[in-house]
Length: 123
Image (cartoon, rainbow, N blue to C red; front, side):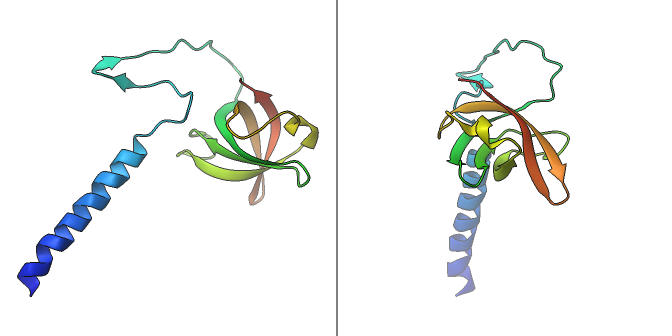
């Protein structure tokens, strides 16, 4: 019985491993591609002294003053990118934002929560 199940478990483990690595290589919409058909693509970005992070709006809760973002790594706080709900210091800055919008933002840590103190629409 163990000889019959071993290939099934190995196949399952290999599938999970490949799927995890494939999802880690995905880029955010609008994010510059790293490799495309064996050619390195470089997008020129104006140098900035501003500590703004970049991301994409997933959902906006204007009444609650919150925004859900899919963001790239933020070295000072999050070493890996992800999706998170952030409180917004100035709820009026959410005006005109909707799902899919690209934004740049500055986030500040308040104990266990994170608050966006500056928000700029990049569209």
